[in-house]
Length: 274
Image (cartoon, helix red, strand yellow):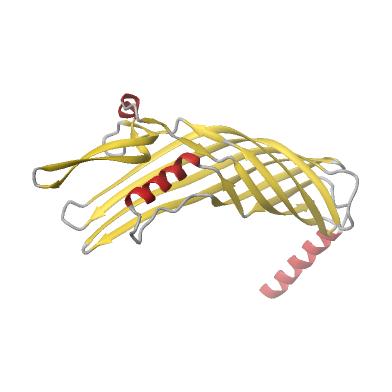
């Protein structure tokens, strides 16, 4: 019985896809799978930390350049040459550094999550190159973006674990072009390129332990470390992490950090019109 129901559902879906014109009414489009983002300040921090403190060791931070991105849209066919779509997506990635020495282990992690809520117009010129139909598009997006940082240590009895969360709403622009390939009258796939401008700063949150306000900061910090009994050494360390807002405003070498999602994508999409 279940097998019969599945065959019936597939048959009805096939009939629905084969019926009618390919651009009519409403539809859905899903796309992905990755995007290249700038994240200049974070990647500069990673490069400086790797070269100054991790060079010659088996450890290193990873840069965040190509990161996963997926989007879903609801489309409306306004005219044969114009579709409009509203959608939501997710851009995500994690950079982690874990160092072990004997019974001691320390871990630091940065986690990016961005949810673009977009409105896009698609223009389909009335010409084609064989099975390939070109299209152009552009639109705007409102991005809810979070940047979280966690740090933990285990090994000597002075174990600790901290996690800070910061977030920000921001505005962005996107646009691109591609070719659509019809598979069935109502089903098509497309391949194209997309460019985006989306650069945000002012990420805020609260320290979960103390409740004080924190801001995502970038720059350098000074540490004084006792390298041996009675001997102290000063280290200038690159920083990109949530820090107390008051501390950042009073420290000349720190500023509010940018989360720059500006970049480009090779986009593969699947579209179904109803």
